[in-house]
Image (cartoon, rainbow, N blue to C red; front, side):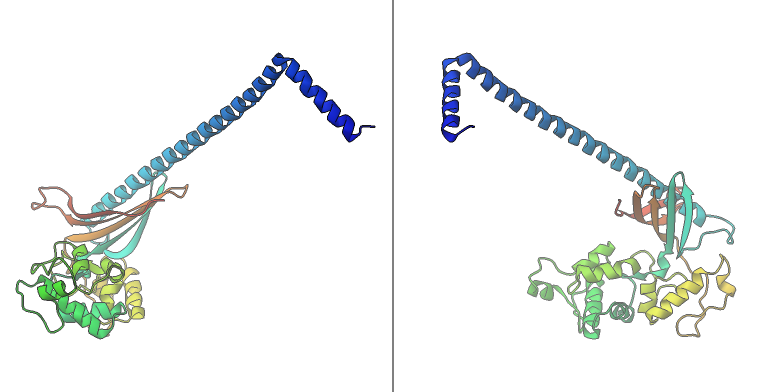
Length: 318
């Protein structure tokens, strides 16, 4: 039976044996070093494997999103083709209705909105602008202030409207700029107007344009936000759009639909040559890409090209 005393004596003898034989001690150190080298090589090998896998996944993701992006661009070009069809019964309708089709492995959804159905911030009057803000939940007094500030921004003078804002008001708000006293060059410029914030702008942006040149949107193509700005309730706007999009091309003139007041006919025609196109492509593995572009149909002014890009924005990819 081993006792603690005998165990201690055994350890003492082993230590003396190792000390008496340097070669045995060297072999022990070498063994430990070999274990460390093996451990380091294992870590390096695992790291290389992880890097290789990550790069493979990144390459695959890049390939998928690129494929989806070009499929979305194909959707935009097909939309132009559909809008240019000579037969009005075959021509695509630019009232926001979805057009779905396949392109290779991708499923594409295209929505086209005639910009005459949007609110032109360079042409809309104060009542329409105020209605636009109120429809988005802004209090009436603040809506009137924003409306007047927009009018002061785009007019050529420095005369302040009752609720508007000119250069002194911008300086008083510690801003380094003032109103342009000129028409808006881009829709995003609206964010610089005194009193505007990004959260509100984000709600308004889908219904805005600077390309129609009309004081009032065309109800035949109007977005929900534009219809609400013209006095429709949210429910009335959605019902009208549902009825409008249920009609076949060419049927709007004879369908007997009316605007939200119940008396004004919802007339066909009156559209322009500028369109907002939203094209979303999705691959079978879930990768997708969205582009949102504003185009103007071609002709002599476009140098004979089928269309020109006025605004281009890539959406999120996944």
